[in-house]
Length: 484
Image (tube, rainbow, N blue to C red; front, side, top):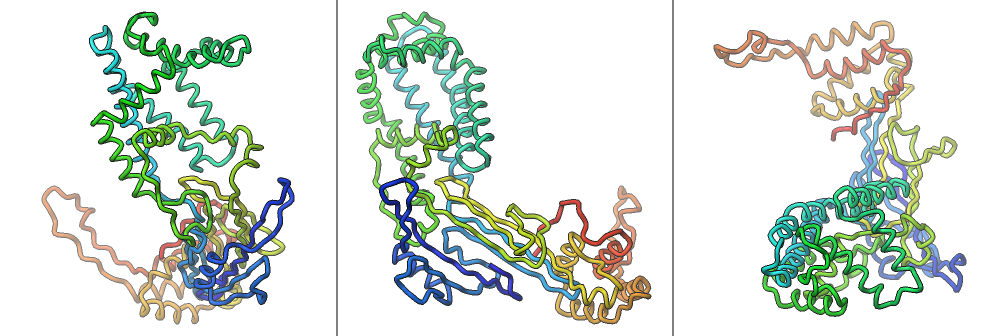
């Protein structure tokens, strides 16, 4: 992409790597015809002469709002003034930009799963000592802890943390949270790991090991011994599974929670596979899950672990993912950006593979380009660049057409030897008297002071301040996005 006047020139090249029989030997081929047709409807020109070529290139010019042909949204604007220009580019690719939706899913999933567990346990422990303590715990601490842990796990997978190391830190927090809140004990965890991996332990005993952990946990919360007869229903894994599934299918309360989950799921985007071109294809019909499947989906929404964060090599077994490389040619190095700047080519680049995350990949940049010829002619040197030029362009954009014409005509008359005097005279001629508010008895006198001022004085102040400081580009690193 490259800003061109008030437009943005954009070229899109698409192709597909079709894996052969080995992991590292891709066969290049053309993307699906339906996707190419969609690109052709968005772009004004198809650059590739051969319609059967593997790589197909499209070109077009867009004003402001970018086409979002890769499943996202974007904007690129440039403000042109006599002193120079300032621009901003921001675009996201695929994914979704909704944070509330996933958190709603987590809350609903946690409430429904916990209500289901609470009802199922109560049906087996009715009349047993300590049941009231257990149900109070389930409705308060356990409900809150489940939501906290689910949000930790979701944040690791969502893209809210970017690097693998930081994601692993989230998982470390999860483990510590479980230890701190008395869900797991270090020694018991090692004992469990030994039992699950010891060849001498039978498969039947390994299947019962998780139930023993559940019995111990329930016993602590109820204040009774783990060998109490009340826990007899937690002896056989198959019977536990059948009992829980029957409760899910027959409980009216669970049914209401499942129906709310279905409605919320129906309102979510149909495709979260991570494809950059998913929006160019018809959405697949959603299968309506039964109660047991819906419960499994809810548990999955809570226990959202991406094992590739620990073992990146697992990515070779994942479904193929789209990859995007973006290049934005600019007149100067950006003031702020998350891309990689190449001074030689004057280009910003981004490269990433999309994954099924709540948050999509995003690119952004803010840049300025001073009109050196105009500034040297009228101010003796380049006085506005960097952050000051960005602020000036934002201010200049806010002028009405009549004000802008008046200001520009004035700038064309400025001469280096008389800059400050000319600016002072111009602003003095355009003073506006502000009327005070009606005084109230308890108001301080300063609240009703009458000030003389002019909106032109803001732009003038930016220029004068820039003239009186060393350098012109500025370097605080805090450049505001331009207001338009």
